[in-house]
Length: 484
Image 1 (cartoon, rainbow, N blue to C red):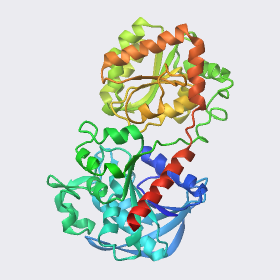
Image 2 (cartoon, rainbow, N blue to C red; image 1 turned 90 degrees about the vertical axis):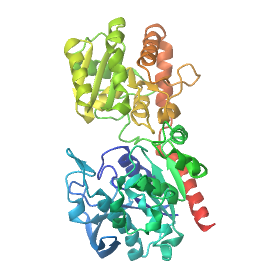
Image 3 (spheres, helix red, strand yellow; image 1 turned 120 degrees about the vertical axis):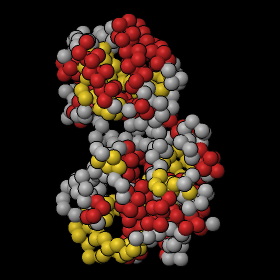
Image 4 (cartoon, helix red, strand yellow; image 1 turned 180 degrees about the horizontal axis):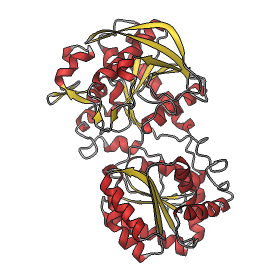
């Protein structure tokens, strides 16, 4: 099949979050299955390419609601693959420091920026004479594309092109003042309640959900959660209406970048058959933070953004009781909410031999925590998929997670025969404390079971191969629905 990805980010070219990881990782695996896969991205100022992109001769005449806009096109490849990447060049919109925002907030013209990306990607297909069977779009930023295919481009060769929309995080919906909607160039009738209309606003994601042929999200449990009022972020009614077209597919991980047997960030290799490298990593991690070097103490780690979604306030509320009643130690790599940052920093000052905190992000340290911590803590209020728990299991750290979204789909309870970690469900500090104490008890009393959990996690298949095959099936369904 011919498959076009249109997205605002793709690792390692441009990345801000998990969406970029998916768009950077999935196309090469689809190509390996025999698909003709191509990608359209904006040409940002800080694009990270291995060699300068090649400027193409084509000039795009992009018809939008603000008139015809002229865009240039450059071409490169996804690093480490042969997947073509077309870069849409429009300096007024994309020659900026950030993808979506600055420290002051979101760019006020994001509706025009990503409207140009969406319409421009489709115009490029027509100019190249390369008509995809499926366009795969991601979150609100490219959610106009299914509507373009269904309306103003329905009479072109793209009229038979199917669309698949992936929801990476339903919280981000692209709600703009209704007065901005004419800038998209879409017919006014699409701004109705079963389209982009949303209580006096234009909601791009909502319209994309209605217009797309198939919908996916990044785990089966999250697919169920977003159909209810708690997880649906106001769009649960739309998702129940489209339930037959919604499929949850767990994200894979980059197993080359996260390979404990060859990781240059680790002081020694680690494998499921030889866990001795974890002892070396644990020693190095304790030394890194100046903790008590006693290896008999269980070490809990966190690599996380510090926002309400991640639930680290739940840990802060019981941190003194947990550390005061056990021999546990704790290290954190993260940043975000200033109050949470200060509370963790204060704990590190008060307990320098038990608590280590690094505020910010450090790639080497992230890998060392995965290889050296005995447990990884993720008490997320919601987690569409989650990658950190998958990295942790691959490196032999046992995840302690809330039973939600992708965490529920990837971490098997410790008491099961092939268990990999510990789960709790209520969004309560006391529930988190109880499961942490269970983990400490297992560490201190049953080292053989601890080793089994580590090895089970390390042997789990977290590759993109299985996910790519599932996406291939979704594309077939979408194309068949379009033809039918």
